[in-house]
Every structure is written in C-alpha cells, then in structure tokens.
Amino acid sequence: MNIPLKKYLLAALAVVVACVPAAFAQDAKKPPLIEVEKVDFKTEKMPYYDQALKWAMSEVRFRVKPYAPTYVQDAYLNNVKMTLTLVYPKSLGAVTGGRVSGSAEAREAALDAASEEAGSNAKYSYYRAEVSLAPLKIGGSSRYLRFFVPGEIVDREVRGGGEAARYWSGSAKPMAYWVSFTYDGEDVPLYKPDGKLMFPASIGGMASWARNMTKTNFEKFSSEADSAASETKGLLMPQIYLPYQVWPKDTPTILREEIQQ
Image (cartoon, rainbow, N blue to C red; front, side, top):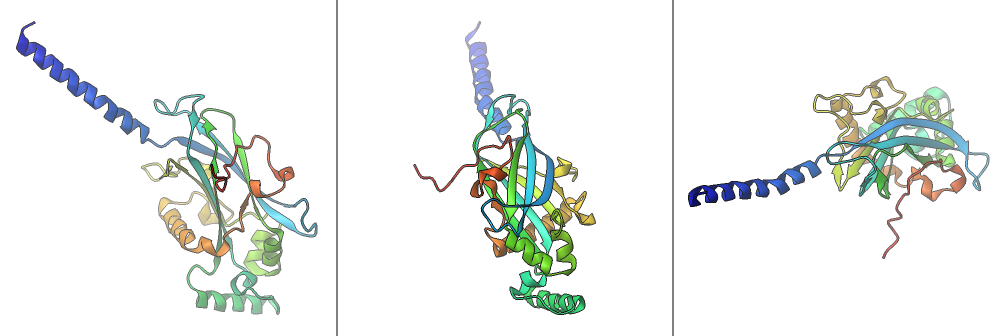
C-alpha cells in the first residue's frame, strides 16, 4: 500500500469513527413509547376518612413498549414522570367558595355571572398531579396508578347542581382528561407528525369534543390547564399519599422526592 492511499484510508476511518457518537446521540434523543392502555373512573369511600363521603378515583393503566434500537426489551427506563390532568365544569360552590342556594335557574345565573367576572377559565376546573417513577422495565407487564380527588370536593360539586353535578355524580368521569409523560425532562409526544394520537386512551373524556381531540384543541386546553391548575393545587392526590388499601396491584414505585440523600 502506498503512503498516500494509506493516509486516505486512515482519514476516512477517522471520519466514520467521529460520526458514530453523533449517530448514537441522535438515537438517544428519540422519545420512548409509553402507551396509555386504559383510564378508568369511579367513586368510592376512603378508609379512615369520613364514610359519608365518596372520593373520585382515576386509574391509569400503562406500559413501556420496546422501540428498537434505543429502547430494548427488558432494559429499564429512568427519569420518567407521569402527569394526569382532569377537566370538569365548575359549580357555583367552586367559583364562589360559598354556599349554594336558590332555584336551579338562580344558581346557573349566579355561576354565569361569577364566571364572567372571573375570566375565561372560570367555567372549568383543571385538576393536575405529577409523579416521578422509579426505573420502568421496557416491555414488562402493564402498570397501574391511581389518583384521587377528596370526598369534600366531590360533595361540594354535586351539591352545586347543574352541569357540574352531572359530571361529578356516579363514577365522576371528567369532561376531558389527558395522561402525559416526560423522559429525561423532555415531553413524550402525544401526537404523531400527521396529527393523530399516538395512543387513543391518552386523551379522552365524556364531552364529545374530548374524544378524538385534535392536536389544535388539545394545545388550547393544555395551555389553559397550565395557567389554571394552580387553583386546585393538591386536590388531585397520587395514591402514595393515601391508605395502601386503595392502591392497585401491579403498581410502579413512586419516588418520594422530598427524601434527601
């Protein structure tokens, strides 16, 4: 081999080697596939709390799916957070914080007046909770997480009458919900590039506009939730803060971020 050819081959090899880390870095940025398989809602009494009240429960079933070449079967996915957001119409009690009285028509009129005064988000309550999860096994079995709204809130909204009572009664299914994830601080996409949902169960609800929600509508509601969810801070509680008797089987470990090393 002559010297110029040898130098050429060594230079070409250096280029290939230099490109390998970049390729792996690019693969590592691909988001994982975390499928929300089902979201269920019901109301039930909470052990050790007032047995005259029923709490609203949301149960999320999800699974991390293999996604070659980066996310392989039986490996573990670190730094995952799940966020559940629920949307309900507000009752007069939620808007005013006071007692609800008078006829149904009077209550609805008072609600409309209070909503108009409070602003565009006032007709909806956005309940939100986020949990950090211990490493999740890729391709493992389905996992379940539960979130709860206190019985006092459910009772207040039912007594408020009107549209709010209709949603909070019975199984307390929300107008709309969505389950989102972050991985290493980056959002896991809910929608494909063509605007279709990655997984149908990730977004839904009782309202017709919540089913098969377009990406444009979702971005609108998500933006409103970002600005309004602080009004209900702490009222959607992950299972870890409640008696273990109401925890589901096959639940992942929720990290207690207040624990310091």
